[in-house]
Length: 351
Image (cartoon, rainbow, N blue to C red):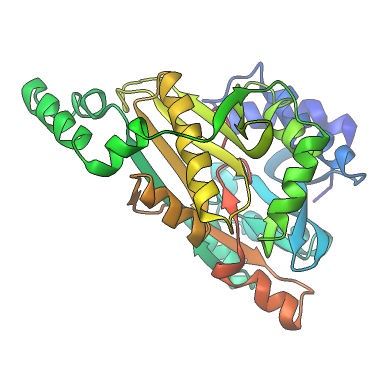
C-alpha cells in the first residue's frame, strides 16, 4: 500500500482507464490532478491518494478530495473519499477494507457521498455513520418533452397541459420577480461576502468561498456550468450553478442539475426568489426538467414551494467521525446539521 507519488501518475492514469473504461481517456490526467493535487494545493495540504499494489501493478485506488468544512463555529480540514475501485480479480482479498483502513489512519475525520452499496457495508463495519439521504427534487418545466418518450404523444401532450395548469408552476413562470439572473465568468470577493452571510445559517457545510467556487465550477476540466448571480437591483442575493445533460438513450429530454446554491437560508422569501430566478434562467437555457440533489430541510421546503417534487433518494451522506467528540461529534452526525448539494464530493463529474 502506498500514498501519492508524482512519479506514479502514469500508472495511476493507466489504472483509471482500465478500471473505468467508459471515461474519456483524454480527460483522465487533467481531472485526476484537478481533483486530488490542485485541490490540495489550493488549501496548502498534501494530496491524499491510496494505492494497493500486487507487486508493481496497481490493483486498487482511492483518493480524497480535500475540503475545508464549517463545523459549528470553527473550520476543520477533511475530505470526500472518492474513486474507490478494486480490480475484479482482487475483490475477494479485502482490498477495499485495506484502502479504507489506511484512509482512516491518514484522514481520520472523513466524508463520503457516492460510494457503492458494497463499499458502504465496509464503511459501516469500520465505524462510519450514515447521516442523511441525499434528497432528489425534480421539476418538469416542459412536461410534454419529458413524457413523450414514456407515453403515447397525445397522452404526453395532455399530461403536459395538466402539469402546466398547476397553480404553483404557473406562479413560478408568471409572477413578478425581484431577482435578476446574470451569467458570471469567475467568483470574487463579493461572493466571499455572500458565503460569509450564508455560513451564519449553517452548522455543517463545505466552505463555499470564491476560491472553492472557482476551483470547482470554473477550473474543473471536462465540465461546463451555467454560473449565475441572482441580483435584487445591485444587491447580490445568491449564486446558482447549473450543470446540463443533453437527451440520450435513457433520458430523452434535456436535464439541468442545480449543482450548487449560495444564498442565506434563514430568509425564506429571498431563498424562494433566488430559486425561481435560477430556474427561469435554466429553463431559458433549454432545460426540460430541473433537478436538485441536496440535504437541508429549509432548501427542501423552498423547492417544494417552487413546485419541485421529491423522488426516492439513491445516495447517502456517510461520516467517519474519527477523533470528534462531544457536541462537535453530535453536530457532525446529525442530519439536521448538514447542507449538501450535488457539487459536493464528485457526483457532478461529466461521466
